[in-house]
View 1 (tube, one colour):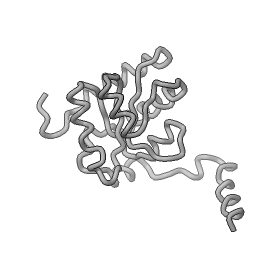
View 2 (cartoon, rainbow, N blue to C red):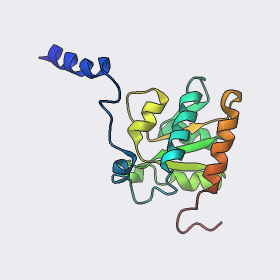
View 3 (tube, rainbow, N blue to C red):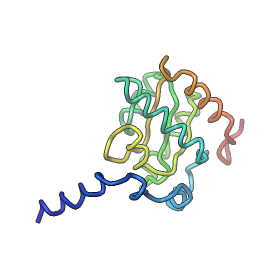
Length: 159
């Protein structure tokens, strides 16, 4: 029985990737938490995933997971912080945007934690990722930083 399931799961990988496409950006937004602001637009989300993908090729330039990102921020590491918007329970990570604002780190939410993990090249989902600047993707990193800082602040935050 287990062998049959593995064979069925392997079948879609051999075919075209466009056939087995997941939910759209708009459908993913339905599952996002109320506090997930500022939310990245569809175009910005693609850029964020691109930077994460490029950063994951270099060993210490992408930090993932609540524990690792939180400890690195407290130690003074700098970078763009990307949160998943569909995390439940949200209490697990709801303090992190405040920590980012305190340390003046740019942060943004993306709709799906599964996509965040996929961008890193991991099969599991990921709550948050911190990407550090590197020479290979410096231009894209700086452009992304400008766009994130240009997003409107969450409600109740004074600028």
